[in-house]
Image (cartoon, rainbow, N blue to C red):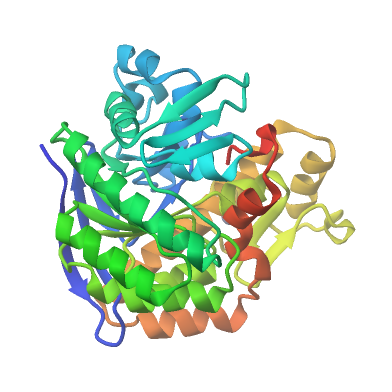
Length: 391
Ligand SMILES: [Zn+2]
C-alpha cells in the first residue's frame, strides 16, 4: 500500500487545511506535529507513551542511524518500525541537514557529499542514490530527498547549491524503488523569493509525493521565514502534503498552518523539557527558577497530561535540581502533550471555521520567546559538538 493524502476541509480566511495522510502504518490527521526521535527514540519516552499522547508521526534521523547502529542492522531486524517498537508512521530525513550543519562536512560536489562521522571520525559519502537506499533499508513511511543546506542569507552560494539540490532531487526520484514509501522533495533557495519559486516550480514539475520547505528556521529573521512560505506554498499542488522542516514552537505552528503547511517537526518541546523549560498557556516557564521551589501548582492548571495530574512545580523543580531521570520524562510528557493538544485544537478549529479565533485567544495570553526558530540555527551557526547533535 502506498501513501496518499486527502484534504477534508480548507479554512475560508487563510490557506489552512485539515486532512488525512494515509500511510501503510496508519492514518495521520493533518496538520500534524511530529516529535523528533533522532536515534530511533523520542528521548525518555516509550512508544506506548507517545501513542497515549496522540502522536501519530515520529521523525527519525538518517545520518545518525546510518552511522549507528547502521542501516543494514536495522533492516536485518525488520526495519525501523520493528526495531524501535513503534508501529505507527515514521518519517526519516535524508541526512543532508546533519551533514551540512555538524562539524562533519568535508567536501560537496555534484556527486554527493563527503563527511566524517562525529562518532569515530571515519569518512563517508552520501550521494542521492545512497541517501535513498539507506532510507529504503530503514523503511520509514515518508522519506526525503538529499538536499544541500547552505547559509540562507548567502545569495551566490544559494544559486549554486539550489541547482545541485535540484539535480540531486532528480536522481533521488530515479533511485527510489519502494512503492510503500512516499518520497518528498525539499525546496531550497535561502531567503530569496525568486530562488524559492524556481525551486517550487522545478520540484513540482518532477512530481513528488509531498513537498518540504527546507533551509528555513536556520537563523533567518522570522518575517523572512513566513515570506518564503507566502511565495512558495501557492505554487505547490493542493493534493500533496507540505512539510515545514524544523519548526514547532506554538506560535509558529499557527503561522505555518495559516499558510497551508500540513506537517511540522521540531526538537523544541523535547529539548526544552530536558532543560527544565515547559510550555504553559502564558508562555514558557523554567522550572529551574527559585520561584518554583515551593510552588504547589501543576505546570498548567487544567492540563490533562499525566505530569500535571500528579505532580507539582515544586516536585518537578526538585527532580531537575537533583538530576533525576524522572524529571526529564515528566517534563517531556507535558511539553509533547501541550503541542499535540494544540494541534488537535487547530485541526478542530479548521473544521468548524474558528481558526482565527483560536489563534487570537491563544496568543492573547501566550508570551512568545524569540529563540523559537533558533533551534536549527544553533546547529548551523555553532557547529555543535557531537553530544548535542541529537534532538
Ligand atoms: Zn501537563
